[in-house]
Image (cartoon, rainbow, N blue to C red):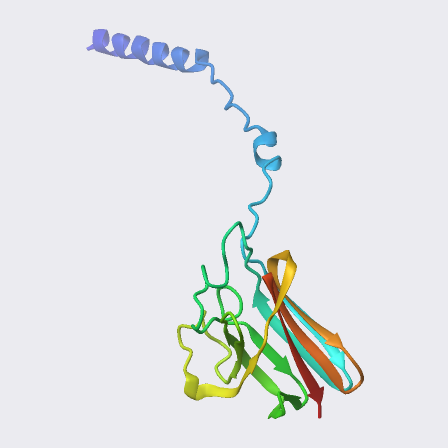
Length: 192
């Protein structure tokens, strides 16, 4: 029995000694350059907005701004004569805190989905009561509040990203401009 105890003690001492002698290699450090030198991935259709105060009206347009990226946009990526949410991702929306007049029609203070139907000769501009929807997935013509036609302006230079602007003409008049690719649409309005 003492022989087994002696062997157990020797085996235990060998085990302890071997554990003490084992050296652990430090984990290699992650290169900080690999994480800090990588530029953040650029968003293809950044979310943005345009705002202006004209007279006593605050106008706000919220949209995602897609890029041309060497594509044919109107009559290509966006087929003519079909409803477009006038931006990327969620439908573009416009909000006014005061009644305004567009194309001789009254637009009550509120928030509206902004849609268009592009074509070569003229565009249909649509303000729709359903402003909170993905793309045109839930678009329904019966929810249109204002619908009218406008002639687009064809530019010589290319506008890479979709851009909206609201320009003050006077204390009671302004213009909403949509520009993308080589197309520009100007929508005049009046503050009531």
